[in-house]
Image 1 (tube, rainbow, N blue to C red):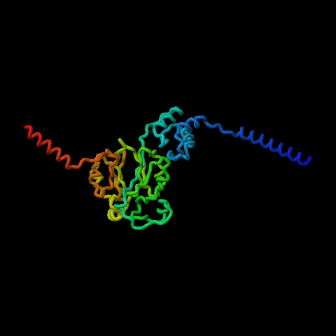
Image 2 (cartoon, helix red, strand yellow; image 1 turned 90 degrees about the horizontal axis):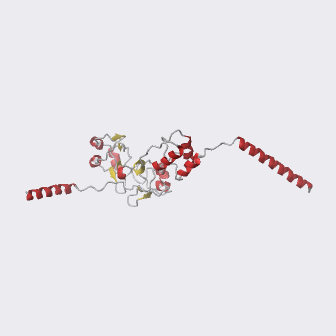
Image 3 (tube, rainbow, N blue to C red; image 1 turned 120 degrees about the horizontal axis):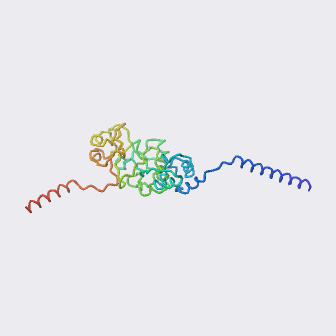
Length: 294
């Protein structure tokens, strides 16, 4: 009995001494954390999407507090409004940032890019991409398995059952970039939303020469350069047989869209154009009415 009591006393004293030592060590090496980190974290949306380039909102808050300025730091989910609040907490000025949105740069619909094989495996774009060209002959286009849809935390993407391509709900998209990272073919790009969400984009990433690109997809860019020729603002470049439109330079005149022979350039969120015949008819009617009046 005495042995048991002595053993318990020894264990108790040993535990107490260890606890005291751990407390002393913890106090000596304790790192004081800036209380502003908690304040900034409360301002952040808490999505932990990684779109800011950090592991989560806590890491983003720490980076903001440690930084000497907020330049280069952005919460894509909260946008300028959240960055302004962070600036107020830290006594820094947050520059206004133009909102962005995810754009699927592929228009290889089922009609333009017919299926040439059938994939029978795990429904994953990443896995399919690592195995072969895909169910069509285009090695650059969307694989249609929906990895981007699964990666989106905000329900901003869905698969179109008719075209087989992802659709972006711009009202829900936060430009966190998760879908772009999930796409093994890098066809999703974060672009400026633009005025009234309007933008002119080349919906193709195929860098093959004209004939092979056209053979793989009827809507592919063939790098002909006609769009670049008509652009008065030097917004279009053609490299590696592929045209690209610089959103900062584009004035959305849509001349490039008109001359594109394959229809790979799309003006997104613009109102429907009136048929050219309507304008001519209106002019003729007005002229006739004026002549009758005279």
